[in-house]
Image 1 (cartoon, rainbow over the protein chains, first blue to last red):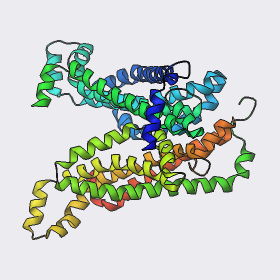
Image 2 (image 1 turned 30 degrees about the vertical axis):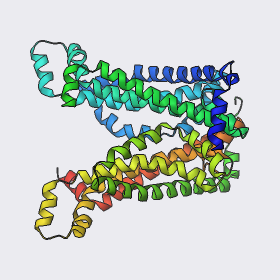
Image 3 (image 1 turned 90 degrees about the vertical axis):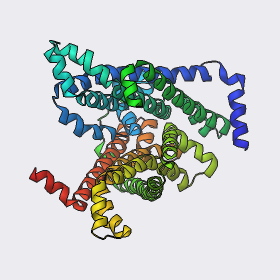
Image 4 (image 1 turned 30 degrees about the horizontal axis):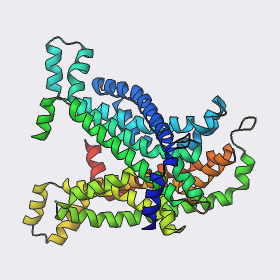
Length: 231
Length: 222
């Protein structure tokens, strides 16, 4: 159990908790990149998914291409982006942009598909009733369909968030910092304490994210809906 | 990386042999993971179907395994198993299980009760009923699991490149091209690995057509 001891020693060493290469700053990099890419992906995918779900337009495209998007391996996507992002910026294009864009590509599909599915699955009777009551299409989407679809929407964003947190680790093989950096360095220097310390930190961050999203969902979902799912 | 063509065809043609070897390694690593993972998952799924209380445990464990990044798992295993084929295969197999088990369980759950009753009424033994009724009807969802698992595994094999030059399949070219600032290598590795995933996916769609000819007929007949 030398491994556990080495990991605990590495994690509890105060020297690893300060400076630009310390755990707090790597954690910040990891969270900032994940949060940024998740926000970008949500900004594009959520309105698009809601609109497709509401109008039913190009829904065939979503259904058929969702799997294809998920087939894109992030490792290859990050690598493939490098030649193009380095044209934009020789420095950041080599370290930050490939991982950032690849994480947007990773997070988009689950958010889009769930937004589409959640809205498309809303009982048509309810939508017809809302329309008969004189609600405008916009009001129907935002006031009726979206609250009902919220649990499904939230599941999409949650699974995207956990996937991005876990996968952003890959960026460290391509010049990005983040918590994966400890894994890369630990592997290169044969320092198991650092390597497993990195693994523990990433897994803890992913599980914390999962927990926070579950808590948030419980607060956001309307009481009536929650009761229905619970019952 | 500027001042150079996107693809240096002369490099590509000079390296057709090694590229083919990497494709072979890629398929070899993926095929082992998918077949071993499928066998383990089938056993786990069969157990979960019979003992329903086990299923939540299986899914929670599987979800927890999925939050550990492939990158971390590969690197962490080096410390435990050294650099062997197991170092690459253990994470790959674990990730296929996460995708397989829910699909296989859902596949067998999707068989309607009245169909099973009818089979019993016609005098099928439990073994015959499983082989001739349950399994064929579960095929679409089982194949859906195979598609997911093979596509995701082919993608994850690239990550094993971080273990060293003797791993990674086409991922080797992605990482090596990045380190050497050589675009051609990145494009060869990245595009071919995506191509392999697409081919595997289409292959399983075709397999499903062959295994369940009635499904296609029903769709055509409307």
